[in-house]
Image 1: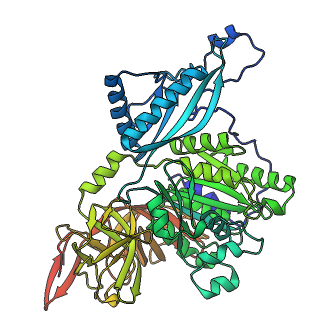
Image 2 (image 1 turned 90 degrees about the vertical axis):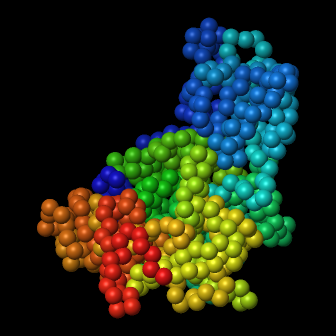
Image 3 (image 1 turned 135 degrees about the horizontal axis):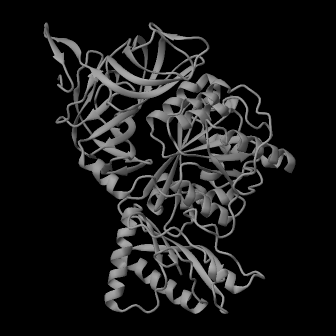
Length: 606
């Protein structure tokens, strides 16, 4: 990670002055892969168009995007081949695929006449029905390519109808300064009703009485927004339950609502490191601009390499000039060397489609939305974006994770009447089934304890099988809750988990007021692990200053933890912040039955 990210942390309270360059703005018909734009008819000569025909990037063999010149009356053999091809594209996109009709395999935008397009879409619909999917036309574009007949290209989303709760699930962490409208926006999206301007929409999201009284989120809450196979929104409107939303949805967006106030920063960092969000949504209030923890949250997302997009809220409270000033302020920060992002302002449905596709393909693109939770202005653009947003991992990576041994991170612990102890978290690898026997640990003395998974719930509805990358709650029956804590892992008995109290990490000091030395105490975040550690040694140096790199040895001060080499690490103490990755783990020593034994990478102690 570039040490220039420290500018975002160290300067989080500095005013953002100066001008900004214009954003890269999404335009009608912009190529999803960053290719040339298909031109509409104009006064230019056709010869000039023929010399410079518009192109998309050539079709990739992998991925979920397929180019088809035409699909008019295929033979039975050809039709079966096309269906097999669609199955492959859907598998690559984990249930979603995008078809570009009227495009050659090399990316040339040829276009089809209206009659040919109608026949091609009819064939595509038949193909989708054969594999149990629906199609939705995302957009149509006219091309003027050496022809007197109007020719069009159509972009179509193909999405599988869900079966057995295997919907596509994307996790979006919601960041932003206090009072920027994060919870209100989520309330409007998930409840289907606009806010009244006084925070009515957010009331259903709060978990504690003091949150309702102050209007400020202090804990992590989860809200779901579904899209069915036709791309229509499925939420709590029409008195739906969470179970009905899951049953009706082909794609699920799980929003992780995080705290904006600085005193709850450790909760926000825990949400970003532990829940492994696919994307982050940074909410900025149009009337206050970049204030408070906004810059810090932006820096956290960049440090943890979480792709983020920006929502400017409360545009109904401001003049157009104020909104433009906030957009320019964001553009200036995004273009700084520490960020090096390319802003893309979304003003239409076509912009939203382009933004979603380019955002997933290029880590430098940052879409910016301007909307209101009270008037509903541009709210539909955000829904279009979320509907089309593809997953970051393909089916092959998912399969590889599922082949590994079971590993479940414990993030939350509850006691539910008549159910017993319940843990919430994310399955990092493997498959977890109802009735499976696992071990949980490490305890304070480095042991792992046997337990049984009695039942599983995913998105508040019952589930029999949990797959790698999915978040869920597991009921453990009469297991003693006092033996559990956040940061533990539940693993397969065959696994050899690495338990350590001392570890080394290669770090970059993002910000520190003076010098970072041996003996300094910091709060370390590694995945779902959050514990105070002391700096035992800085290799090759006596001290560190802001922006410097080093390999540092840390020691946890309370109890051993389960870590992996290569895991991302973030540490903080007051204004001091740093990032890095774990490079080495040291075995711990435990006493059991009066005998001292070395518990190296792996030996389970029951």
